[in-house]
Image (tube, helix red, strand yellow):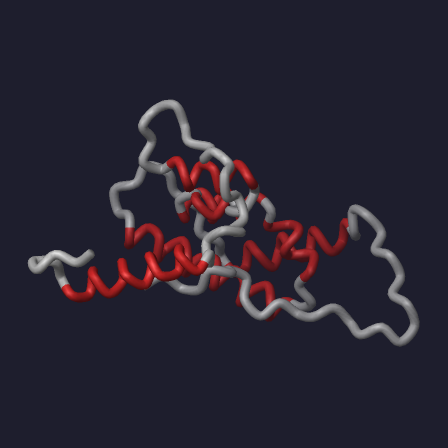
Amino acid sequence: MSTPWRDPDVARVESAIEAAARRGDFDDLPGAGKPLDLPVTDDPDWWVNQRIASGDIDSEALLPVVVLLRKEYERRDETLAALPDEKAVREYAADFTERVHEDRRANPFQKMLAPAWDGDDAVARWQEVRAAGPAVPAAPSPPGAAPPARRRRWWPFGRRG
């Protein structure tokens, strides 16, 4: 039953919900009749924490950019080992350093900094990694298999700006 002072849009939506409930559209929804898994304390982010705990959200994606850059820098040998030539190494180092500088410009007062990476240093490290050889021998490709796809960007989240 609609009251005269009610917003017409709200009344239309509520009447549509009531009609759907009368038709039984909400009867067989997943989780119907089950209690909600709510926290005991008042936590406004309970649903985010629940999604993280269930594995729906990659918790690393919630880290600050500087932490992600430092982790990427720590794993640089793995990335360098996959790069085919010196030009790709220099491009990667330039891209990484640009992202470091973007983060520094966006957060000038942060105490933690990711290291910038000179192209010559990256090439020297790349040569060391290639000279050391692969840590684990790669499995041979089956005959006629396509070569692995080359990565186009090293940073999956695009440029910030």
